Image 1 (cartoon, rainbow, N blue to C red):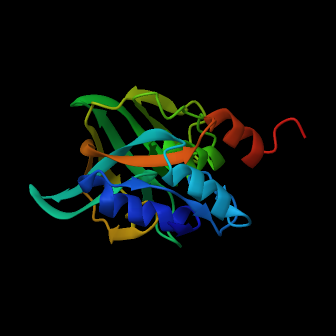
Image 2: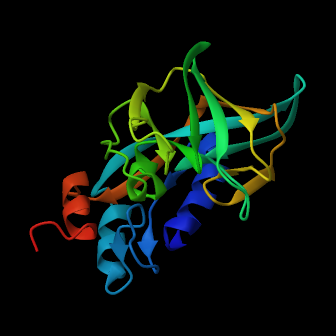
Image 3: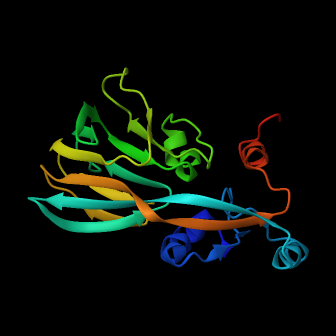
Length: 220
């Protein structure tokens, strides 16, 4: 896959069900999941095709929008599922449940459900934690919450997360910022772990911590 992380997200969602291994050549900017530089990629790619690679499996989310008991929209997400307020409207109020247990009502600009892969994306900008790809967990990250004690929380990824629109106009749900649907009051966004995973191949010696250090400019 030649491009940026957005390109890889789209391809990853499409090919996860087939177990196809993906190699990312970075033609974008950050490149958290397209980690091979475009300049001089031939040598790296040749070695990888010869078997010199590290394999890395990433979780995938399956999200549905339920309206009056019927599914009106569904999509997969590799980074995150985001529920946002409208462009000109005030905050939304969201009821959050985990495995049927009430967690909290959030009055905020929205909320992010992020995978470990997505923990370095929008969720990080909103103050969420970094999650190592091997951690079977998701981060629930409120966006600009009205109550400052509404903080990000990490939950195990086998759970089912439900987000209900209690109030607010023109809310929307996005999946990897690439699939978008409008939401009505009373809609429930259900997020579960997909049975499929995305397979990445990295150059021999690849380390997630090396990626963080390079992309986030640690120690500089």
